[in-house]
Length: 102
Image (tube, rainbow, N blue to C red; front, side, top):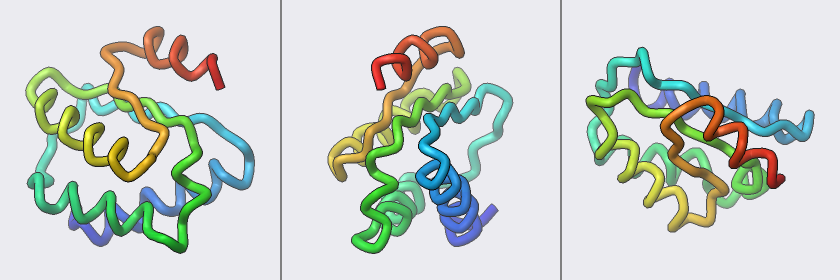
């Protein structure tokens, strides 16, 4: 999936979550990451641009696969630095526990 497609996919999910007042869990444990750090950085910038400010408020938990933990730490740091409400969790129960505070 290209960065552009990933951004459009993420945008559609986040718009629906904003409309329906949802919290999100993205489970990447079975995913195979093909996105480089640069595409992740600029994809986050594109997704949470000035025109999509409401999406920053959506509580979002990411569950990484073991192979890409450092990548997901980078994504979490970049997102938090852009004031996105995101946390990397290690399991569904941990993600649910974190999301319960919202």
